[in-house]
Length: 121
Image: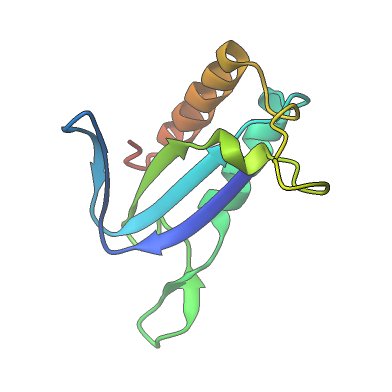
């Protein structure tokens, strides 16, 4: 499981002219699910992502995690993170999980974030 995280002041996802997710300050998480991923890996990644102290405290030091900073999390499925680009000019996505499995683990990851009392879209 691969997560690319970015601190944001706001973020949204639009699909076919409809906003499907929207947050204010917090984290944008692009989540790629690989073949060998399971709930245990999702739990560990969720713990890590939500625990990163990348928000400033009152002294301006990066000392707060997203929950302590009062932020939200927007999780976006991004299978391209599982690409193998080692050879040639055409990436291989064979390392990515099958769509049904990827969707289930994506939803599991989102639910784990919500269980930590964090607004998650």
